[in-house]
Every structure is written in C-alpha cells, then in structure tokens.
Image (cartoon, rainbow, N blue to C red):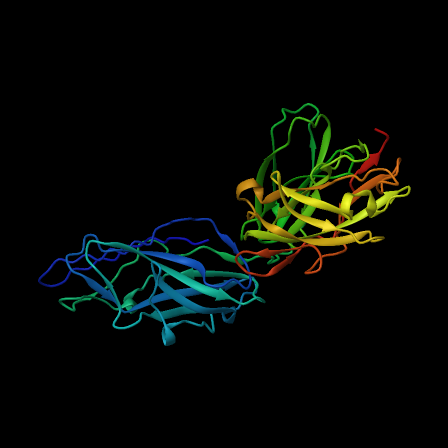
Length: 428
C-alpha cells in the first residue's frame, strides 16, 4: 500500500515568474503490511505539479530517506526503481540498492526528468524485498530538496524546491514481524446488555492476523472474524456478535497459523441421515481464512475419511468426493481402495481476498459426495457413519496449500484437522 505525500516547491526566476508546484499529499494514510519476497512493490507515490509554472522544467535527481525499525535491514531492499506513470525512468546504474539507512539519491535517466508546464504527473517508487526480510521500512522525502537539481528547461535557471508537510511515506511492516505481544481474552457479560458490537483493544504482534473466537464455557470456541494490528501493533477492533448470545461470553484472539486457516463453517451441525444412492450430499463446508495482506489462490485440498461400522471409500460412487465453490464444481478428491486419506488439485483455483478486504478475507468450499447403493449393487452399508474432514496432517505441495498472488510463495494450510458430524446411511 502506498502513500501520496504533500509538498510545494516554489521559486522566482529573474526576468520571469516561475512556480514549480510538486505536490506530495496524503493519498492513503494507512500503514501497510508487506510480504517478504515481493517484487517491485509500490512503496511511495509522488505527485509533481507544474500547473502554475510558466516554464517547462527538468529534474535530474530525487533525494529520499530510508528509515528502518524492528530489526529491518537496508540490504533487504533491492532494485529500487522510479516510474513515471508506467514508464521506467531509472535504469542500469540509476537503480538503487541501499546499503544503509538514511539519505538516498536516485538519478533519473538521461539528462533528467522533463515536466511540461501546466501538468500534474505521478512518480512511483518500486522495490524488491528479500524473502528473509523482517521489520519495518519507511520511505520519505527530505525537507532539503536542493539535490533534486531542478531548473527551467529554457532559461536553465535553478529552482530551489521547498517541501510543505513532513514528507513521510507509510510504515511498511513485513508480514509476521513480532512485537512480543500477548493473546487477549475478554470476558463480556451479555445477559443484560444490548447486543450489538464488542470492542477489543490491545497490543498485539505486529502485522500478524488473529482470529476472534467466542465461547460460553471456555471449552468450545467459535470463530467470528479476523483482525490484524496496525504496524504499531495497536488493535482497536469492533465486530458484530449476532443475536444468538444470551449469556456471559468470553472472547479470545488466537494468532493465525501460517496465515491460512481452515475451519468448519458450522461446527454445530448434527449428523445428517441419508439414503443409499443419494446424490450431491453436502458432507461438510470449510471456511478458508486468509490472514495475509495478499490474495491467496487455493491450489490443492487434502481430505481424510473417518468411520464407524463397515465403512470404506466405496460408500461413495467412484470412491471420490467433489469440491464446490459458489455452486460450481471446481475439483475432486479420489480415494484408492482401502485408503483413508487423499488430496486433489483444484481445476478451477479459488482466490481468497486479503485480510480486511471483501468477505473479510475468507471463502467457503463445500465438499459433496454421491452415496453408493447398498451391496451387492454398491458399497454402502446401512448404519455406516461417514465423515469427511480437512486433513491438517497433510500440508504442502502434496497436500493442502495455496499460492500468494503478490509473493508467488507457497502458503501452507493450517495443521489442525476438522471434526465434522458426518452423515449416517439409513434405510430409504
């Protein structure tokens, strides 16, 4: 996430009146988490304004300041490039690779960057971040801008820019950076309260997602939402409870494992009763929570079978179950004879939006199966209890995983298996 900074550069040229307005104003003031390993991340936006200038100007260099905190290292930033809109304007030796924090200077290609009078244009600073990076980074424009070397294109008269505002960009904290924070547990008595919103405040691990869970007995916890502290680690979050709470409720924040968690969409469903030959039986619904600041694509799903009675995978027609998203079949998982675990690659990948965006960073996948007929025409047996669950013991490229859309990195699914109620085969 980038920020547009605000400043104003003015000067008077002898024999002519020239104003060079370079506006660096707040564009998006929100500090942003950033993924280690990301390429050409947009870390700063600078608006150059020459609308009141009577002369076209050229800019030879751009001075910047790099600030580091929470263990960040300057050498974790590489290939810092400036773009004029979508056009690269720093190549070869003009590409910056910082070796230390503090002042930085980026020369523009050729004789400099020409800004026609009467224009507003935007420069973008983009950089790569090493996969091992951690900590917090911040790009800024310094108060003293004489190193920009701005001059009128016709008169060659020097222009001394003046910055208005602090010139600071957003705090960019690497996802997963820790501040040694605690998990909070909040006790809220709702028996005589007006149901609505609960507010949680506290200091958490920086840029690490937490899952909000509620419980009435401190034993069974129901997931409600995801929250994430700001780059400073401060949490102030309000979320709806729902009308089903009529008693004392405890809330806790639990750090999200791997940034991708999977849980039952409805953990309180009772056992379903189905007949042999029933088609498209919904076996379980899985909610995938994305706690990362980048979109994720679910590539593969691993499932396991649990049973009582005479159950085997033959209880499903063709020994397989199917995966659905928004009513559309997107994959299947087939079980070999005698196998209780398997995985399948989705042939239509599902994208989970980033944390705090649409759908609060989550999607729901439905697992369905066609129940076989009774023997000898099929593999179903009356009384069998069939359960299919997310297999948290199988994560990775041969199991549950997703891919980060910004980083391109494999993101492992959570290692906690689900326990669904299942379906029971009964006589039609």
